[in-house]
Image (cartoon, rainbow, N blue to C red; front, top):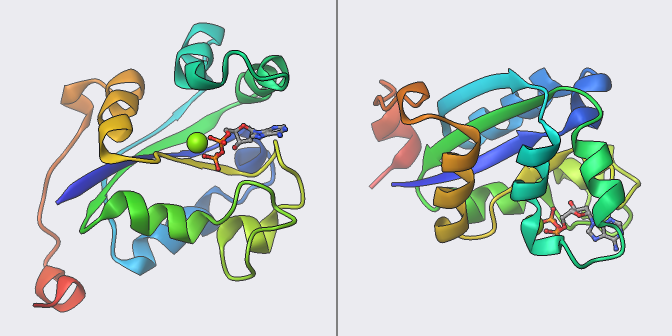
Length: 150
Ligand code: DAT
Ligand code: MG
């Protein structure tokens, strides 16, 4: 089973979409392993987006991620990274396919509501950045045989 880090970024919380977006991931069959509301510090945001440090939009991206509370989640399931990225859609809301979160709710590139880890390796790093080990819970939902199949 794989884990991924999902952030419902400040635009999602401000627009009161957090509940709807959590539901989309749950409905697909991913299970929550961690969940909290957190107002990211500058240092946390900078570490999270460190890979984009040299990009022209980096400053604006950090201001955005620190502008209000974020819902941080760890989701678990079969190929959780790929499953979540497919649900989230392309980076630019204009290009994201209808049916995806960004395709249905976003028209911006920066204010695109959700972050999802792009590999299992980056997921492990990002989870360690946003969560303490003690904040993560592993359990087996009772419908697992029905959801995960054979
Ligand atoms: P994603 O969030 O789809 O993984 P990314 O890792 O390439 O996209 O970029 C991280 C975030 O940076 C993205 O969610 C929005 C912002 N961003 C990316 N490209 C941008 C651009 N050309 N202009 C402004 N913001 C951008
Ligand atoms: Mg990315």
